[in-house]
Length: 338
Picture 1: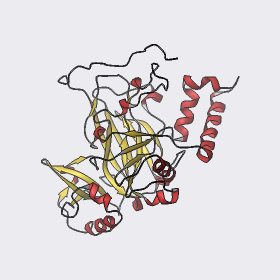
Picture 2: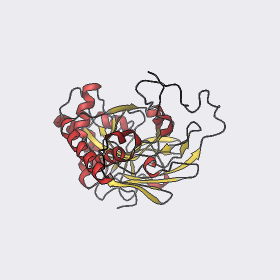
Picture 3: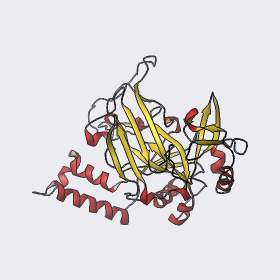
Picture 4: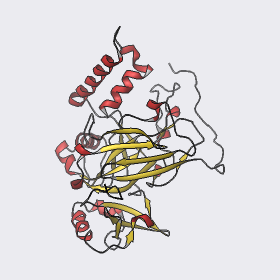
């Protein structure tokens, strides 16, 4: 692995900041940066013109460097993408949750061991991959942060959790796309940490029982530092790794998906109109905070890496006291709706 986390003979597409000036850039594995703003006003313009812009970038990758990566700040690679996020989409992770969590214990057979219950839950995930339907929810681009930005822990809620994921970046528009067409829409891949405050999720005062807005707090989606073009990425050899204060918490193959990207994208295209630059997050592997019984606190250091997609380094900090106090605050258990 090179100093940027990019694989040899590849490049990443970034939005960088130098002294307050933002520009679209191509980053080479050795850390050399080529400013491409004379060709593309921003990275959204690159995706709007995909795949032709990929050929332009391949030519620009051979031109002299204009910057060094370690001397600029990496911003979220895209400024205002739509975020489409897959839930319950990692076979191992979902099977572990179904085995350990209290909400599913009524499905355990008498005398069934954890290993037997897990095997049955994993087999159910494999069956779901063959016969089931993806589950997606929408996110907010206002929650995006740069790869090395601080993660600001909201004063509302206490169980701030991590979920490192691979996201596909779309290079075209589609409606009712087949999986074959959906695969052609993938321009590249990017790393995203799908943070959320999990103690705010559960609700008993509404019939459907969950409130996902606490996944969209400011800075709760560290993204990048690169979009890596799809021809450079082999998901079958890609690994997702996250360390918290030096301890490995997530380390799992990226392709252990219930539904792969073409099927996720095809499903999404039946529910919404997909646009160039949209991000589709594939879901988290095992090893989030809830599984470890540990959540993020002030001063924690998150170090993340996905093979060939770069690295993130995010320090957790308490939300500023200058922020006005919350009106509603953390959700409390209200009477159950019947």
